[in-house]
Amino acid sequence: MGKLGVRGSGQPVVVTDSRTILISALAAVPELTVTTTLPDVPTAGAAWPKWVQAAPPGSLLFPLTHTFDVYVLLPAGYAPETVERADGLLGQVCQAIWDVCVVQLAEPVNVRFDNQTTMPGLRLRVIMRKVQE
Image (cartoon, rainbow, N blue to C red):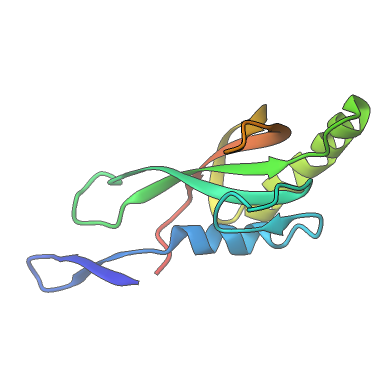
């Protein structure tokens, strides 16, 4: 944690490490291999948060509330397996992150990589629940 600014009373305003909190929560799902960013080698079960935005929760004196997109890669090639895996993982991921964030939406996506290949996945838009100090 680092100092972002100082309130008039001298109390520091601290930026929280929301990404680390979210990664720790995702790691509770045994089927996932969680990384901080898009993995070098995309494989089914890879998961990572991507920071979307931060907004002040009503006052600029408080730490920002962070929004992330959480990506989870699914097996490619056989549609029934992809659907079955998505159905099973969605509930597990939502349960694992429930205490640390609110899930705004979940949707199927095709994740595109630098080499222009794609892989099926899930994208969950989440907002961190509370300031973690």
